[in-house]
Image (spheres, rainbow, N blue to C red):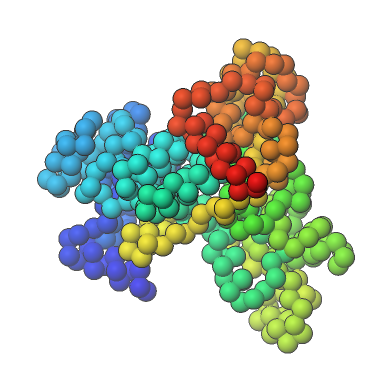
Length: 434
């Protein structure tokens, strides 16, 4: 109850935790609605390339229209906030420059936006928590390094599958259980050929962006999620793209048992995902327990049987749950999740169809490419283009369907924040490995 009581106190004292956010689309709208319910917290500022979107998200969450001010400079934004207003802006770097705010987050699926938001925070001494695993997978290691040097907090949020997995991993590690597999249940059958057109009807039914839905179906989102979890825990994919078997609570422990015990796991400490409705939307950790007494107690408590057990959380609430980690970051300086010093996994860019020079990649969920997880050292060996940099990349050489795109196959915008950070991150990792 410590967090709830702390938030209640902030509420009663009229001193809410003030959050700034770069946000877009239905994620931004949902985050605004979620924040409106949390005691002792306030979404004080929203940045969006289309400020009208931010305005609509705040009014839909119940903020009176007359309480919302658009601002383009730090002074104007600060004055509005001190007058008790909410602020919208087109500049994603602006929230980081506002001392009245306690923390800034990024609520998008864009590595470029997440990187720009986070870097602005680090440069201006503002703590940042990303609700954007794509940005963390792409440049999280260098953001962590720069944040530590600047004395600010950098973290990935709770809510998405990696953040939820961190809770389970910490729990079972604290109990001393040996982790075999950490993973998630995929919400839909895997189809690497999915495009915005092929998922348009299903996207329309749930009022979601067809590009984003296609990134779920073609597996790119799952690859990013498990790469994020791998880089924070040290667990590794067993093969490119992972295995992704059908499984439920009863079968998962034996499916992911070590090969010597009849399962698929080649080594302890791997990341994967499962298909099928039984675990969809949840996260799981398969452990091995050798101690006979502990196994007896786990069986009595109906956790499983034998020496492999699965701990399962049946849901993740994504940006709806993220305020918990934002509050903990402000109140207790708690880093919910951050990458290890050396990346374990990378998401490679793979051609979804034959590509010809002159084409532009749309990134996740488009018509041109999708993502596959692999070991970071393998990605380096292949000179593979990180999937987080695929959006807007220009094809300069023919690439056949199913081939991995390399840095040599494309040109990228070298002046962009995300590309500059990735170049710096690669140099940092090479130095660590030297």
